[in-house]
Each structure stands twice: as structure tokens, then as C-alpha cells.
Image (cartoon, rainbow, N blue to C red):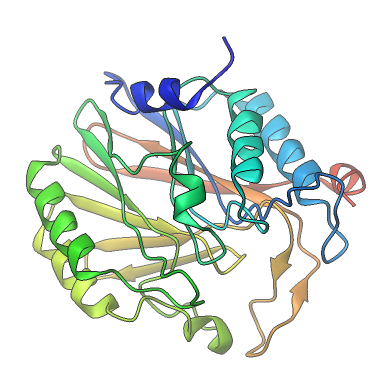
Length: 267
């Protein structure tokens, strides 16, 4: 069955009773013209290649897209993004906005609601501020976060767009959530919060803040260098992250990337 916005809202409420496999994609930067290139990459072709390879490996229970879904933030682009993911996956699909996104154009297709399954909640955190590159969680969203955590299941995975801690790349660290200290304090007050995943930085990283694990995931298109303090593109391939959420609250995770032969087809 072909997906639809209404279908998307229904599946977000699906309860999954077993271990849950989550596919995390981020920073797809789709153009309204599916043939347009940037930085030598066709984002539409690259995203399709990522989904093809990921779904050839296994079928996830949940797909999470953590922002910058569109480079041209139009309703047409978001519909294209939704339809492309739905051509692979009919289950729960959570997409949040990034700094390149416009929520008014996203909202007809996507809804920021938690995904509940067994004793886990996947909780969206809106860190984007339209017209600004850096992140911030509004007062209203801070209050919503606190209320959602009180109602959440035994274990929680939080999904945002911007990092909450430095990743060690100066120009990107300047973009992290401005009130990150407040958000980290709230997350650490709730022992049920196991991890925070995000994008924005177009690279893989693993950090720890107290008991909280923080992971960033490669972009499905172009990558940024991780060992330089100014903007530079990396030759690394587009990637994605798998997370296996266990009933005991542990998470197994790994990053995978397209092969060299697959990269040749996305430019």
C-alpha cells in the first residue's frame, strides 16, 4: 500500500512488542528538482542508494530522519522525501525539522509525535529555529519535553537535529543547541533517557555526558571533515546508523556507508 500523511500519523502510534530496530537517516538535503547536484552529489539519488542498501541488509521497525530533510524546503520536496522513504517502509516513520527545513511546509506530511513500542519511547526534540543555523529549544518545547518524559515508557531515545555537546570541530560546535546545558540537565534528571541521536554535522561521532550516550550520524549525501576547524568536505561516503533497542534499556548501534561502487552512481 502506498503511504500517505494520514497513514504516517497512524503508524506513529503503533506498539511494537519485540526488540526494535531503528534506521537513522539524516541531512538528506533534497532539492525540488531531483536531478540537481550539490558538492558533486545528487541528494535524491544518494538517499535512494542509502535506503536500497540499508533495506537490503535488514528491514527496520522504525525509520527516523533527524532534519535537513530538504535543501529546497517546499511542500513538493517534502512530499518527494516522504514518498521515497515510504516506497521502502510502511512502518513508523518519524521526521523532525533541521535548520534548512521550514516546518509550515513539512507539517502537512509529518507530525512530531513520539513513537511508542514495548517499553521504549522515541521522543522527537525540535531544536530548529527558522532563519538560524544554530539550534535552540524554545520555552514551549522545553515544557513539552518535560511533560513527554513524565509520560514516556521505561526507556527513552531522544531525537534532535543539532548536537547537545561539542564534537570537536570548531565551526560546527558553534551551531550546537544554545540552551544545551538546560536540555542536558532535564535529560539527566530522567534515568529512563538512554541516548540522544542527531545529525547536522554530516559525520559520525560518539560522546558521553554522564550516563547519557550521544551519537551523530553521517549524512545521506555529502560529508564534512572531522579533523579540521573550518569548513571542508570529506571524501567519506554517505551513511546511516542502525540502533537496536533492547527491552533492558541497552542499545547496540553501528554506522554503515555506501560502497565505492555505489558512490559512483550518486553523482
